[in-house]
Image (cartoon, rainbow, N blue to C red; front, top):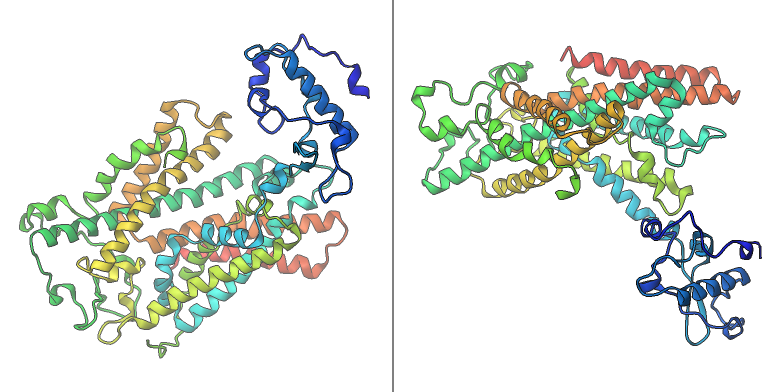
Length: 522
């Protein structure tokens, strides 16, 4: 064989070099030395695969090197060219049979059911808490229609994103994500704009998390304080409907209007001289958001993220763009869908699995939004009492809601540093070429992110509005504009662009612009 003419020892490689080899391309002969039998003892008529002549020779040479090498001497470690390739590694039996070891490419793939649930789990987030509020803002009938329409629209745009790397000829796009595709088509403009809009979605999610964690921490503390001091909050103070444990924490005197922003977030304490010390130091907007800094800011500075019944309201309302903004972020997975689908075992089922995942997500959002909206007791309460975080419609004394808030608080505390890690990796990698340039750089970035969360949680803790604005902003580029432009450019280069396709995808871009513009008039 040609490999037999190579020298047994290479002066350019030392024993230390072999200690750094990738585990898939090297063998530690002291612990994983293969057992070798003569070629003639391997049967040919059994169900097991026989070993090729080349593999048998390579194994013989490995056996030879292992005899030359002492237990601690690495100078006679076998060179790389005598290490069998992953597709030529066999397990030998003393009985003379051989079983081929499947390569890592086969073991790392996931079946369709795992891929579908991975997409479903990744897409489901804090937006689900705002679904009843979004249905209320759009109206029951129109809200259901919008959820279905936006879901189908986002699925189509995600399909364009998924197939975009494969349409680039003569370039290895196996490790590409959609921002890389944007850079290929639009240069630096595509690279930096995709990074900026991706940051909007991540930072927006972190701000929403901070608001929700402040909310959950406040209500958890309120429950414990009331329970310890045997304080019973009367129904009149909670403004419930009597028999149902549902409250209207910020009643709207004009149910037909849109007073959500103006009446929703008045100060908790009012006249500070009239409240007890607990309420003074345990406020949802004035103190609790700052208490979270002590817990979460140190976690962000870690180098590794691994450390952690009424359907009579068939209405149509002009506030429906608020729901479209929320849904844009609720169905958003476009910046990581290519990576998720790479691990799918059967690549030809990617479109089917993606469609099933979107169907499950849409059904989940519809189930939560429609069920809570329809079951909300009105009368005596108004549907306008439904809050952007529907858990706010339950009193802090409710034991089941207390348990739910506690678990959600714990979950968000563990996820928040991971989101910060993603922001750091993308931002620092683009600016400095290093994911952790220095502790000072990371600390400044984390202070800015935490500061944004504290300010919003203090002065404007409306997660519905935060979600709809961040969804509309990042969706404009990564959902509507870039996928539509990439699709039209690809068809044009292939000579397949037709005027109907150009018009429909231009309308898609205009729809994204209108979705963002409408958020400022709601």
